[in-house]
Length: 100
Image 1 (cartoon, rainbow, N blue to C red):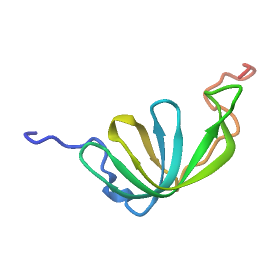
Image 2 (cartoon, rainbow, N blue to C red):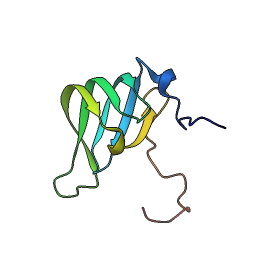
Image 3 (tube, rainbow, N blue to C red):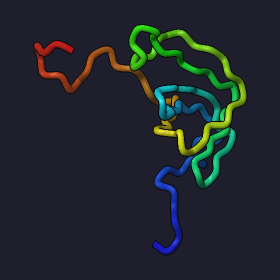
């Protein structure tokens, strides 16, 4: 392979909903409008999921609207589609009887 290729092909997510985890713990969800080879992302109709004041590692149900956002590629940790994903009520990897 002579030319550098992205491990993630974001073209299929253009104009679709994505959830982005950023370094520092912030999480946002919006419509992907554009990106570049450095993984800088442009999201529209963006919502930020706020963290718990007592436990900064936990995301709450509280949100705030951000509108149009540019996420720097160096801060992007994960990009996932919102369609076809769901939160599981229990951890399927826990042994039966083990406490969470």
